Length: 316
Image 1 (cartoon, rainbow, N blue to C red):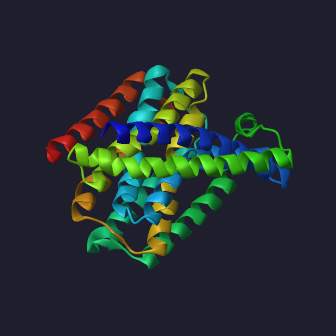
Image 2 (cartoon, one colour):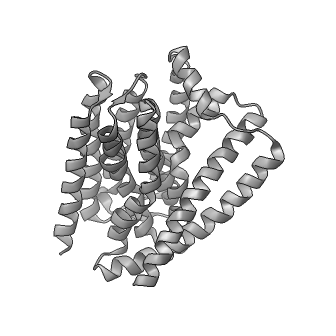
C-alpha cells in the first residue's frame, strides 16, 4: 500500500511537469506554423489543463481500466468547480471580464445531460461517442468565432498567455520530453490507483472519481490560486469550463467512439447529476456581477466537501 502511494505521488509529479512542458510546446509549435498568439492562447486557456487527465485516461483505457478512466473524467469536472475554482475564489475574488464563459457553461450542462441520456441504456455506444466528439468540434467553432468579439484588452491578455519561444527545435524537444514524462506519469498513476482504491475499499470507478481526480487537480489548484492573485479570473474560470467540456466531449466521447463504454446505473443517478448541480451553482455567479466572491467560493467548497462525504458514506 505504501509503495503504491509513493508511485502514485511520483506519477502526479510527472503529470504536472509533463503538462507544463506540453502546453509550452503546443503553443510554440502552433505559433511557429502560423497560428496567432490569440488563437493559441485561447485554446490553451480552454483545454490546456486537460492534458494530464487525458494522459491518465488514455493509459487507463489502453490497459482496459475503463471504469477508472470514466470516474476520473467525471470526477475531474466536479473537482474543477468544487475544489479548483472554489479555492481560487477563496484566495482572491475572481473578476470575469468576458461574457463568453456563460454560454460555454450552458453547453457544459447540455453535454453533461446528454451523457446521462446516452447512459440510460447502461452504455455509451460508438455512435454516441462520435456525437460527443462532433459536439466538441461545434464548441471549438463557437469558441473561436465568439472570442473575437471580446474587448481588445481581453484578447491581448489571452495572447500574452501563449507567449513562449517559437524555435522549432526547442519545441520539438519540449514535446518529446512531455510525451515521455506524461507516459510514465500516467502509467504509474494508473498502476497505483486501483491498489490504493482497493486498500480503502473503493472500486476502480470510485478510485478514479476521488483520489485520481483530486490528485491530478492539485497542480491546477496551485496554478489557479496564483492566477487569481494576479487578477486573471478569466483564465481560472476558462480553464475550469474548458477542461470540463474536454473531459466529456473528447475524453469520454473518444473512448466510447473506440469501444462502447459501460455506464453504471448508479453513476447515471448520482455522479453525473452531481456534476450538473455544480454547473448550475456556478451559472448565476457568472450571469450576475461577473464576479465570484469569497463567499461564493466557500459555498462551492462546502458543496464539494458534502459530495465527497456522501461518496464516502455510501462506500462505508
